[in-house]
Image (tube, rainbow, N blue to C red; front, top):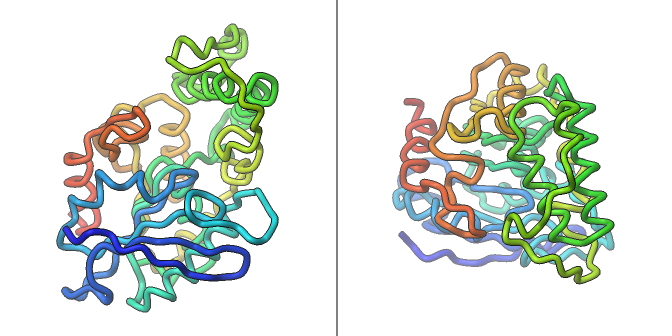
Length: 291
């Protein structure tokens, strides 16, 4: 596969950095394939992208994350702002509508992109979008989110991440039994108990709450020309993001398509979270090709 070539798109409030693997426009006439995450940046797709040597693959660092330096003075991460950035990026590619594989918060951004700019996307594969509104226990999910935020605010990143892991690995609805658990010890997960004083982590702070607070517009999404596929990891069953994937699929009148591995199933060991990128890529290729 062609080595990624970095580019910068200067737009209002950010220098948006993106990487292109392959020719633009694509030599075979197929749409470029965008791979997007949130708060994960472009390197999170380093294990997945090489499995598509026949496609032009585009990855990027969302506004305010990684290499995409903000100049607007803000620190919040909203699906609406990120989707507006993606629309401008797709225009800059000048290669027509694109296919999108979107992970986690990036899947929420992608749903907003289709809502606001339905002609931008041919096929969207939205993998485990974390959307509280589609859960029967949405209020309890918000309380669980507040719990890991409070741990982060009080004791720093290790404590916040331990509480985040406890939330996202919990099976089923957030019941009284979940909230009765003792505060998780960061050492149980190999995390440091040191506190560096920072409180702006995009995952653990409130800066990204707009993502999990997002409410999809089912009528607009189902009327869009875009083919939307909601994906869920086979190993995610019962966890928070599996339940939000199933809830989003139901909202759109479809069943979620099962992919190999878990929430980070396309990762190759980055971030200490190995998946099955080869198997994941094979499934993604089949889904994009309509098989």
